[in-house]
Length: 285
Image 1: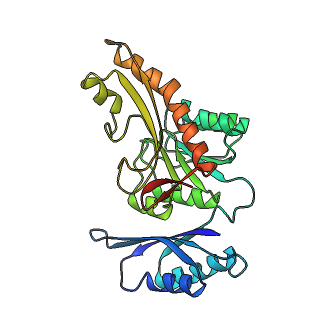
Image 2: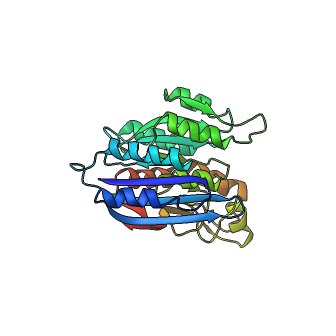
Image 3: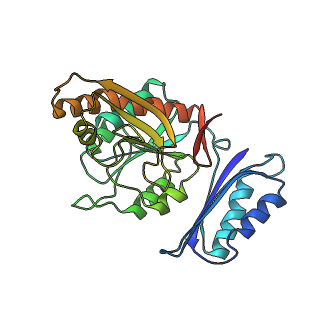
């Protein structure tokens, strides 16, 4: 049974020790461990991936032990395992304005091509509420009147619905490092509306058009604290245009045709466990 443990909290000495001692004491094989100190925020973050013998240590025993360690060390510790999930994996679908990409995921789930369930839709704007209602999915608004996102409210919603994966389907806000660490280990999937690593940032269509590109694309990738790092690519899809094609036409084609297919296929690959994230690199399972 593979288990991912993440820990986040105020930086201090000896925070990782009790977690590692518990794992080794249970005979777990640690396959990945990462730690980071955000000095400017005085924040400690940790990811640990370990394999347990479920006949020796149950998932609930691990969660109970980590809960006690978290309370003692004042850490927010999360324990997650796809192997321990009964039933289909649960997805939180996040968006802002563009409806084509989240609709593609919803349609692929409805058709069975993506073998998962959409547990909640989260947005910093109200525009996608109608889409959630159309597919009978609970909707959580985490933005104020200006669209500024309440990141703590997002984490609360993810915990409330006990999700396995967070899918950012053109969610036009940058997740803070704290959220990325809490759901690290290949649990956050993003659709970037440009080809990585060549065109990161918020305006990849404009940037590609400025250098007279005739091929445009989208990238589905895992999220890590480093924005659009480019080494976590799950799927990419491109389309070509004729010289002189107006930029609005290029953007429309990308948003309505290319991006939805790119994201849906990327989510399918993750849900079907064809690939995984290991030490910030995508590997075949």
